[in-house]
Image (cartoon, rainbow, N blue to C red; front, side):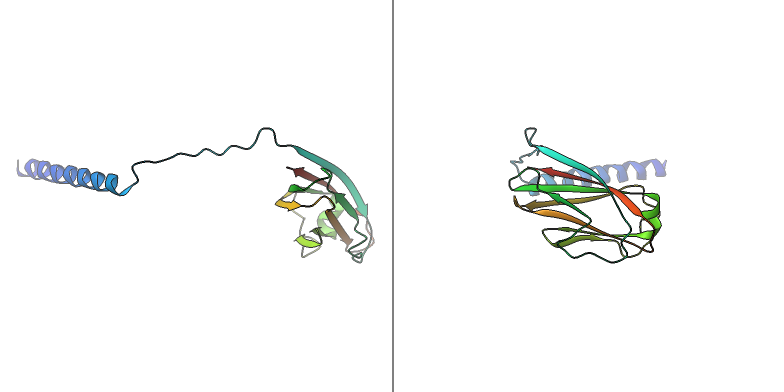
Length: 157
């Protein structure tokens, strides 16, 4: 009987504690809350390019002579949303990749086998670029084997 009485007292005490805590919490949080829902502009425009490229070069080319180059296809200030890379079988174990946007390095694989377990690499960029901006891809092969990849670049407003 004593245990029931103790349980009832404890329950009443805990209920009162929770009620006071809730009341104090209501006093602390702002009375006028505003919920803002951010939606992507349905009228924004995207344009993408898909290119497959191969090389057997063992040395990096100069910054003016990339293996592959994408120009700003929107022909105005825009945003590079993302770059997707799909390496071929040889590239996965024998290729290195360097990507620049406006001559700023945004990606580099450090080893020749860095893509060994990669089916597709999606690199989020979200960088604003000017009308005359370029995305350049540089590739090298570990040996004389031909390596290749497919690159997919998405531009947006």
